Amino acid sequence: MKNSFFVLTAVVAAALVSGPVAGGTVSATAKFEAALTVRQETDHPKGTKPTASGQFTATLTGKTLKWKLTWKNLSGPANQAHIHLGKRGISGNVLVPLCPPGCTSPNHGTATLTAVVIKAMKAGGTYVNVHTSKNFDGEIRGQITLVK
Image (cartoon, rainbow, N blue to C red; front, side):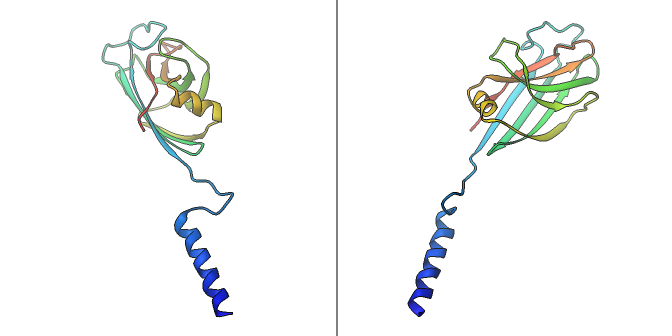
């Protein structure tokens, strides 16, 4: 009986040290960033200051994206901000809303992503842009890149 107890204890200890038990998963973490500028916006913003800019940083753990988005010197208050599908210089559909109308900088939040969105982000096929009343289609934009 003592031997069975020691064997069971050894098995449990080995499982705890080596990681999750069969069927469990380890969530990989990936970091992303984007520098938003007027020049990257494809629809030629109007009334925008050349110094308008922003920064997007995010951490993806499993399917959960946690982000922070900041901006400054826009032509007016930000209406919305999104992650869009699209390579550099190409406009695309909204994938992830980052803030609703009336959003302020800094803005942060979390979202659950699909495998398709994760793949596009890791491949450099997504961008962030911030919209204003003067530039409804977007005032500043930045391509999302994988940091690690």
